Length: 246
Image 1 (cartoon, rainbow, N blue to C red):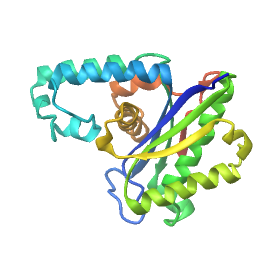
Image 2 (image 1 turned 135 degrees about the horizontal axis):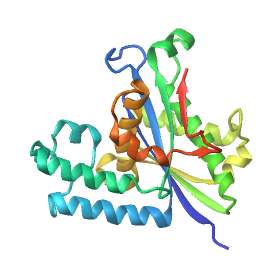
Image 3 (image 1 turned 45 degrees about the vertical axis):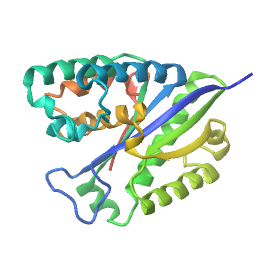
């Protein structure tokens, strides 16, 4: 019997630089969404319709920073009426309960440096957590399934290092997950450019920013976070899909 197909799409908010970073945004979040093949088909159709509604046939890649800055094709959002309708439509898509699951890891750079120094690869460390928690989630499904991990490209050196780290995870496992248990689910690991227009990567990008803002200031008004929060992986009322370091 053929295994049921799932995907883990991964994108980030902020950068992993510990040596020289913006003290006004001293944070890095790696965000993943877990979604079945059936559900990503639904999301893909919804995102295509969203883009057609606001841009017609013009090719546009949803990118959180460009949306917030109203740049690189998102200049139409300077019109506040259009912006509100667009945000409402995005929230309807992202707010669908159960259509995808969120796992993420956030590095608070200043306390992290005080505790661990500046030499660690926080992207790789965060990736290990995402894979680990994804395995926990897949265990709960009790299905025979196959998972493709798809990550947005960053640069030749960074991509090479990440690929090596990922293979090392599969070879050695993590503290909590054995390599056999991991390989039981993971089918492939791919790095894709932003221009590839992959719906899952765009959704991971849109989700990463409100999660990061919430961690920076949990008391601030953050409606986008409220929209996506129900999809964070949890068990018995505990948010297992979020890790904050340290």
